[in-house]
Length: 113
Length: 114
Image (spheres, rainbow over the protein chains, first blue to last red):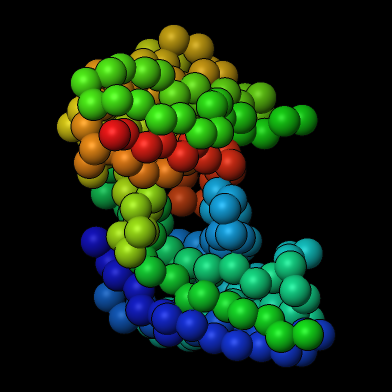
């Protein structure tokens, strides 16, 4: 299974942009890059995903390196509600695991007022 | 639209007891799965289903059974609870298990086995 590496924690100030990095040097050509976040005492929440091109949605932007060995989740204006653990996940293309999500430790983002 | 609903939210069991964790979704999702989350270990896949009548094992299936008689429901059964099954359990669903779709998670069931 391809693995991801993220910093354990990051800090941000409210209303400033946040760039959350993720390294995935062993990514395969068919692996999609997914991002989820988990707020305290809640289930994970889907944020965004992409394959090769940068992606934008109402929650965030995803910037994918040209060689696909790294990606960055961008929160354009952090709010206190964005404090959560952010997981960068490669969708497992292995047929025998039914497309499971492989969660690492994630990055714990704290947002200061 | 309720999304993924898990019940109960909290449960305390004695060792050896059995119980069923309920999971229901109203999004007509074909794919459903169960994860457990333990401190410092992230989420791990227990069982999954790609459609009604089809289930398969995930990474940590021992001690758990599942069935999928309808598209909406995917219950997780603990046959004989053990303290090692103390965890937070999350149910997730997706339109398919394709890589191009995100998953919707429930809010979790916090289980303590004493």
